[in-house]
Length: 285
Image (cartoon, helix red, strand yellow):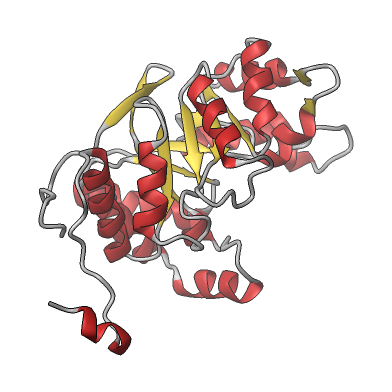
């Protein structure tokens, strides 16, 4: 525990589409096997993680008021959420980012109606078409996102709140310009520009000017940035209504990112435990 952080300080919250959500969102790539590193790393994640492990990690987040989760409707996540809810007595707020058919002739079980029904049954509060859908629909020539209102109407009809998940910063700008029926955006944002399509300062400005709250993802560039570096940049360059999505592999990592984030949000220099190696022995006081 950082010497400056209270063990059970409630994490700050914001409002998206009329729903109170934690400003830190639990990312699930490190539960589901998407490392953005290598096939070997993906295999390690899927071989290591169990519903019990996921439940223990989520319990740490829930105990600190980080109750908002972003992911896909997969059994390991559903079971892990149930474990954490039972352990902490706190209800999860779920953001699902499904992919679905955008053209005729796709698999029947991947038709939009079927996928949205599945998300609702899974317990989603927010349903945000995944990047693989959003960015395929984006028409930069005509400044529109094709068929988006059709999909958001389906999402609202099922009692979920629509948003957009994108890797293309133009999606945020065009959605704002066309008044797309969405309440929030998912946008990649990190200090080294990992997976970002334009320079970091451009995306910083797009987030600042967005008409809706933005859920930023990959703050540590899938492990390429140290947590103090990635989190310091993210928290200090977004607005109070915006969010940061953070993935972890263990309960200790969850505690660490919460403590670091609370310090940065309160403009404190973290006093976190540093890594110990023989080469750093001469730096110890």
